[in-house]
Length: 440
Ligand code: 13P
Image 1 (cartoon, rainbow, N blue to C red):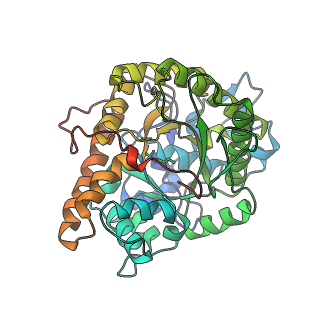
Image 2 (cartoon, helix red, strand yellow; image 1 turned 60 degrees about the horizontal axis):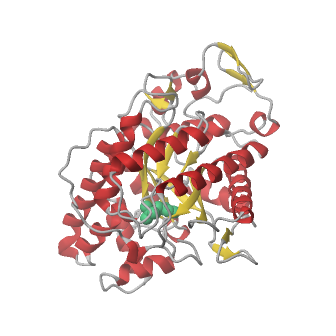
């Protein structure tokens, strides 16, 4: 299939080709040019000069062991899905853009119910106006785009505007941040299991993806939750069900131009199960997920993975970052194909500082084939929300906290974080662990 020219007409402007991945010493799927200019992002005329992701990623002529022929940037693929997908090159560019060095994702896709619980912690009612003001504070924080390449939104927010009437997607676009959308519709129990869940949302998903793309979204998220303990969980039923759901979701997203964030979350929970146990289960879960992604011909360069870091149960003392990093990188190396451009860890209840320190420690195990970076919700929002507390006079300070947290994690992504942390110490953010049900 002929490679799509950079700068093709897309609602939000196309991904700048300056963000397209090139092979580098630090691993395939990385971006040479971390500084993505705003004009580039907004679709400057210069983008047409650049080569396509496929051409830059691959040598001029190569026959891979997977029976895929590459020749002068023309990619001849064995999968009909990939061969006929008009978004194939755009998906690769989007994924490379989001996982560029020093960049990560702001996860702000809490459902209205969960947002309400978070707002309640600072005494705010769960009104649409309060949710809107809170998201405006996040998205309009000056300088956020220096560290954040994508933000995940809940459906209400994707279609919302600032209080002054500027659509959130435009505010993000001006920051150089790609809008993303949570597309799962929450968790339901799997019958006959002890509280294990299946993620809902495949019905009507293609049509919703088309609408979200029209509105400016370029990536999506689907969260699968895997319960772990020292012996019984997860069941093979839960692993199979969730791996299948993630794969079918990913295929539907790619068919409609959205890069799927594939999130198999082996969730941090009660108990004294060991870090080795989480490593073993996460490796198994990831491997099943990629087995199913392969079954559905999902284009691996056009996805992002959002897993948990490898942590023991909550009754075990918090491990040192080096310990977490050792097991996390080993697990990823054992189960994640090198074609995936970025692994964006969730913060999963870690304290804000713990999330940064662990991310920084991961980089010592590089170079790795993928970027090891963040897609944090609570670890970017918790102290930001506390500082704001709904008070106009705290607006600037809260935005500064968010940007300082994003900067610390950006440095950690580069393995250059030295502190001090903007939100030092702190305990696990457990009172805000997600409760399942209707979305996170
Ligand atoms: P946390 O970083 O709060 O775990 O949220 C990330 C996320 O989006 C999980 O779905």
